[in-house]
Structure formats: structure tokens, C-alpha cells
Figure 1 (cartoon, helix red, strand yellow):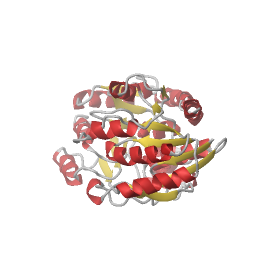
Figure 2 (cartoon, helix red, strand yellow; figure 1 turned 30 degrees about the vertical axis):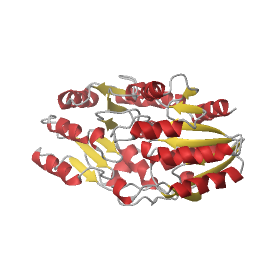
Figure 3 (tube, one colour; figure 1 turned 90 degrees about the vertical axis):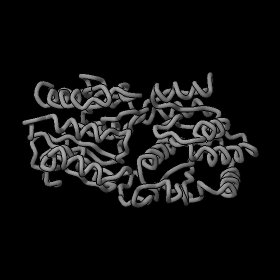
Length: 373
């Protein structure tokens, strides 16, 4: 098939770009694949980060792309659709995570379909977003109205999809493992590289937003009492006010055990943080799924997560990690102590290594091929 992927891709950064790059590589084994990305992904007021461009150089994520799409220009949506249509693709794939892109993606899809037999598939990270805004459902309905098939990566997203579009053709395929960040390193080597001397290390990784629950995790760290041997690495760019978190750390007396790296981490450095940690913590207050968990699984790293959305589909309590109720610092603190005192962590790492085989890119490609026929 001739396939065009539309969405975030190099030279842009972030998890969506990484996902699309790995999908491109997998699909390219058997198909003729083209990638079309943004020349303007977000207007400045919608992007709280420091830059939208990739700073890392991991080769797995550097894929050829045509820089065409302006997310806020309807004229551009039409011209981009015409450019894609001239290639006469059989299949058009959109990674959908935010209704803001609904008008853009929906228009491009309609222009392409108006002159070809192309089918349109949306891979849905979210249908109803965590942080809701007026117009979300309207924009999503417009985009999905041009879809011929949908891929959902958690049952929570599947329920949201079917609540808006009952009976639509879709496939449930768990989020594949992010395997483009290099191989795991010996823990001692990774900790030496990062200057970590703590005995036990927890990792919170990725963009910091309110729904990801870092404030809950900090409260939990304060409840660990004498367990000053458990340190927390917070690694990622703050999309909420960083100062409020720093003040919380100081107020709770956590300055000696919580380390912040408040920057986007280049791709080639990701392996050091996941190799240095004993567990990833996902203290989300709401969630559909988390691509961060799929990075952890690549590094055979167990996950301590809240039991919200689709997280419990990926994190199996007592098998690949531990689950806790959301918004409950005391319960989270208790499970952290349990993890470092009575859990067989080596066994959990081994079961993560086995479990991640279920999250293959091959499964996703097979579902796309089936929906695209």
C-alpha cells in the first residue's frame, strides 16, 4: 500500500514524534510510506514548553518527512490535502491526541478522500482529553467523521470512542514499547553518569502537568518518614508552574531527596535515567494510557502507577509493578515502602521483560493493514 502518516515527526520532538517515527519504520518494511509533519504544530500560546524542535540525535527517530502542515491555517489544510492527494495514497493515518487538531486533520482527510480511494485511520491516544476545553467534542466529531477505521490503545479510550461513534470499525491494540532509546545500561554505570549516590531511586519522567500527579507523589515522599534512602528523580519539562513544585519540595523538607531536571531530555540521554532507576512512578490523577510506561518496559523497569484509565491494563499489580488508588499520598507512600522492603524486584524485572513482548509494533501494523483493506 501507499501510506501517508500525518502528524508530529522529526524535526519536531516528543512522544508523538517518536511514535510516528517507529511506526514509519515498521510500516516501511512492507509498504511505501510517506510522512507529512507540521511547519507550525501549536501557536505559541498553546505551547508552554521551551521549544518544539528536537534536540536529540537518536537515529531511530530521524525519519524523512515533508514539513507542510500549519495547524491554524484553513487555507494550508486544503493545500496540504491537495499535496497528499497528488501522491494518491491508499491509506492516510493520523495520530490523534488533542481536539485542537480536529479541524485541521478533518479537513486534510476530506480533501484527500475527495479525489482518491484513500481510507483514513485515526490512532487515538485520547478521544476526550484530560484537560477539557469548549469545542472538544465538536472538533473530534468533525475529524472522526472523515475516518474509516480507528485504533485504540486502551479500553478507556475505546469506551470514549464508542460513546461518540457507536459501532465504528476499530481495533484495540495496546501501545507498543518505545524501543528507540538504546539498550539498558548497568545500573551502576547509569548512576555514575548522572552523579546519583542514593541507594533506592524512583523516577518521574515526562512533561509535568497537573493531571500527572507529581504533587501527589511529593506528598507521598514526605510521608516516608525515616526512609531517607529513597530518592526521587523528576525529569521533564514543566507545563505547569515549576516554582509551585519547588516550593512544595522545600515546604515538605524534601530538598535532599528530590532532584529536579526541569528540561526536555535529549533522546540519547533517556537510557541513563531509566537504567539508573529502581522503578518508574506514574501517580496520575486521570489517564487513558501512558507512553512513558512503554519506555520503562523497554528498559525492563517495573512501574508503580495509580489505578486510573488504562494504566491498570499495562501495569499488572504484583506482576509488572504495583497499583495504588489515585489522589492518595498515604497509599502511594505505603506501596513505595513495600516495593523497597518486601517485593522481589528482580522477579518483577523479569516479568516486565516477558510482558513487553505483548506490546509489539507488529501487532499494530497488522491491525492497521486489516482496517486499511
